[in-house]
Image 1 (cartoon, rainbow, N blue to C red):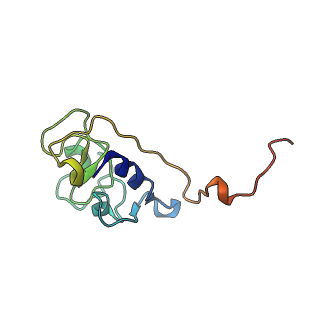
Image 2: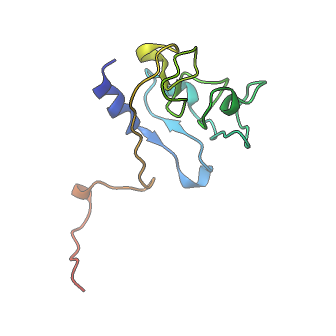
Length: 122
């Protein structure tokens, strides 16, 4: 999987406000689909289904299940198994991605092409 593909995948994640941060992924072939429907977990809010606290074990908050296939909030530069910034289906759990970028926008966001133009003058 190319890095450009990873960039496109991040645009397919939706988190409707009424779900209190539960992630919904629209593509079945990537490392994020494992996290489908999971609430966000932090060290002080353990929402995963694992016996351990995944956020504590893997050094970052994420939409953990039992624990992760991808973790873009892992520890920078850490190459020990699953401890770093991982994307399992791209480089596995032993590779820590040196740079990632996640962008968010409102759930009800519409591209400019679908909006009526409004004047900025009052």
